[in-house]
Amino acid sequence: MNPALTCIGFDADDTLWQNEVFFRLTQERFADLLRDHAEPDHLMERLLDAERRNIGHYGYGIKGFVLSMIETAIEVTDDRVPASVIRELIATGQEMLRHPIELLPHARAAVEALSATHRLVLITKGDLLDQERKLAQSGLGDLFHGVEIVSEKTPATYARIFARHGSGAEHAMMVGNSMRSDVVPVVQAGGWGVHVPHGLEWALEAAPPPHGAARFRELPDLGHLPGLVAGIEGA
Image (cartoon, rainbow, N blue to C red; front, top):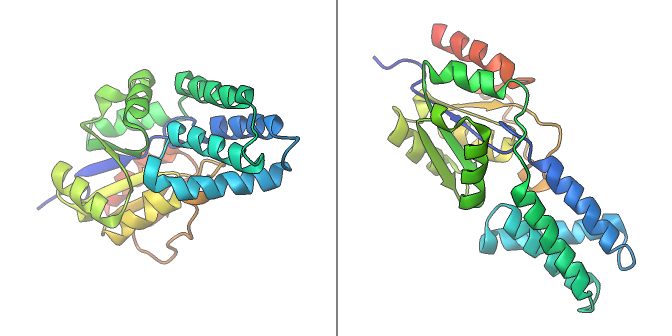
């Protein structure tokens, strides 16, 4: 008989380390650069629209974000955006790509504890090179048995990953800060979905929680995760 959990998946950005805060800081710089052309709230709406349109072209991550900022700058200035602004936006993206990793509270302890007893897989969206850089700098790479960088997180994605790395979604758990990507689809696939709120949420990752679902849990931080896993396995 299989144990309750054979595989535990972790999201990366804003689950194990900081990410959204750097996007917010860059958006503030973006608003300052375009202050003579658009009010900040209107500019952010236009940027979000561009990001939504461009996900299918560029995927998730910093590079697509920078291209969406440039596109928005061109739009709100009626094609008159100065080259110096474009240059500054490119520079901010390069700074984001170089930013050192800042692990979130309890991330290392939780991953170390569970790696000793379970097969762990990092499951993340975003640019391949950037995500590989972050994992290498985090110092957590050796604790994961697999890394999956995907274009979208759907029930089919989780079913495929957990079949490859474990005993299927019904014997798996996914831990992350995004209700839309990390929790709802894995619950729909038959697994455990554990929401660990970050505090900052990208609008395109928002979704209603699956209240009433037997395999949905919410934790205040990763420090409570080993206890939750032990409780599930002991049930």
